[in-house]
Every structure is written in structure tokens, then in C-alpha cells.
Length: 428
Image (cartoon, rainbow, N blue to C red; front, side, top):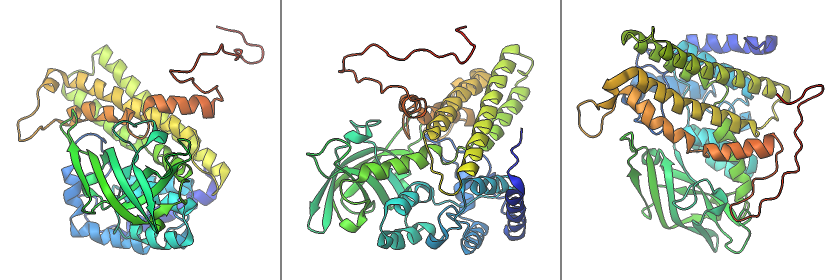
């Protein structure tokens, strides 16, 4: 099934394809496999890091910046092209088809920037956004805490007002890319006497400040991509508080909406590539004749297809909503789908790899094979950016309109929901 996006979008696709063909440096696509996905929680790909240090990548980055194709979804007045979700998805598809990278600014582009655009002042936009586009500021996320993971409203990191500054003190954990960041966007408690959601502030702080330290957390994959951070009295101007003091919850919800659903439309592309690599591995292992293996591969392919169709549905919804459309509860559907899929896919991959998967390869540190990395690292996907349990709660309450799930200490009330099976239908 393909989605007919109309002549205007098809014309845009042709323009994007032509521009990439005319501007991609010769040999860029051959530096590495830019289309192969990365498993968050697993080992980063050293080949990609090496390719990004090549002069051809710097040349490509400069051409993209000149064409405003870095952060292209941002409004034109803030350095982007104001592309809507449909055009961004088409652009991603064309970069993927050409085998070249779409240079991204990580969390700065996808999370911090949209939150500043929506909730920041004119002065904050003018200062922070250009620094993200040019790559000067690289952000990591300071949301989760040792005792407050999925309970985001319970964070205890303090932001105490002192004149025209706030003093940030506390501990954050499970921070992705901390070693590469020079800035952090943190949710802090600025009014301890206010209700949980009401006393929070969204603060941008320098992560290279001498009063910030962090330590890597070794995962079961052997990788150390997540960190625990210690913030000991870092002073930042009130200017760095986005959305105003004690309005951080509203800003954080904008951030999370983009975090959970931002790449849902084209995420199937990387998973599809990974799937066919596993099929090839099964052929080499002589397992494609095994009916159970074939059944598991069919299950995996069904998951990739479901992600594609979900992405097409989101694409159609965005096309209907126009430029004003914002991520909604459906973002949680996408996040739940890909994270649970990838965990299951890792289990299938280990089964196909067989006994060899029980032994790590030789080498310094804690090396893993590619399929071991997927199996071990993919489990993190069901935890970060909101656990699978959190996503199911959002889907149930915000998308399906179910009553809020009672807390462990609340008395359970009898359900008042009557099952409805549709007109003319009955229970199976």
C-alpha cells in the first residue's frame, strides 16, 4: 500500500531528489552505511563516527546548512524551512534512498528547539536556536532521576531563584550522549510548596560547568551510552528558564510529544533494513527451511509492516491537520510499537544466531557481536522516553478515553464502563 500525497508533495519529492543528486559530494555514500540504524542502549557505531570526521561530511554539512536543510522543520524565521511533517517524512525517505545522511542536531533539533519555538521568548529564540543549527550547542536530557524515572512530575532537582539567576542542584540519570553534550535541558523543582506538576521549571544549563560531573553507567550490553549526572549549585540566568518559572510541566509535555513520536513516520526504514540482514544471516546458517524460524521471521516482517502502516496513518493525519498539527497521544502508540518490536526482534535474532550467540567475541573491554548488541541494547528502548507501561497508560487515558488508573494507595472503584461491540454485533 502506498499513500497518494497529491501532486504538490510529489513535486517536492522530485525537487528534494534532484537537489540531493546535485549536491551530495562524490563518495559520501560510500564512506559508511548511513542507512543502517543504531540501537540506543547498545554500542555506538565507530564506522559512522569515523565517516563524520571525513572532509566530505563537512562539505555536505556546509551545503545542507546553506540550503537551510539542517533543522528544516523549524520555521523559516528561525533558520529552517518550515517544512511540515509530510515534507519532513518525504525528505527523510529521499536521503535514505540516496544513502546519504540527513545531518541532524540531535536533541537540540528534535526536542529543545521545538520547545523553545513554542514556549520561549523572542530573545530566547534569537539566542538559543542559531547555536543549535550551527552545532555549537549539543544537548543532553535531564529529566529522569534516581528515584523518579517515569514519575516525571516527582523530580527533586532544585532550581532556587537567587536574584536574576537560578541555582540548580540535584542528580539526573539515564542521560543519553552525556559525553558529547555541552548543554543540558533539565526539569527542576523551583517551587517545593506547589503541587507536583505546578512547581517545575524547564532550565537550560551548561553541561561543561565545573560544578557538573557525570559517570557512565555500564549496561548489560557492555556499552556506556547512559550516564548519571551530579549538578552541584550551577548558576544560570533566569533567561535560561524556558516558558517562565514554575511552567516547566507544559514545556516538558511539548518536549515529550516530539521525543516519542518524532521519527515514527520513517522509523520502519531502518528496521526493514535490519530485518533483511537477519534473513540473510538465517540463510547463511541454513535455517530458512526451519518452519519455526520462518514463523518468527514472518512475525518480525509483520512488525515492520505495521510500523510502516502506522507511519502512513500518521502522515495522513498530519497532511489533514496542516502546519498547525502537533504530536498527540498517537506518538505513544508509535513509541510502544517500535520499542516492543525491537526487543522481540533481538530475541529472534539470537535464536537464529544459535549457540554462537552465547559467546562474546575476543577483544578488549566487553565486545559483542552485532546481534548480541541488538538483543541486549534493545531492552533499553522499552524504558527510556517513557516506559512501555507509561505509554499504555497514555494510550488508554488520552487516546481511548478510559478512566485514569488508580494509584496503589487509592481504593478501587467498580467500573462503570459498559462494553460496546458496535451496532448489530455481540461478544465473540
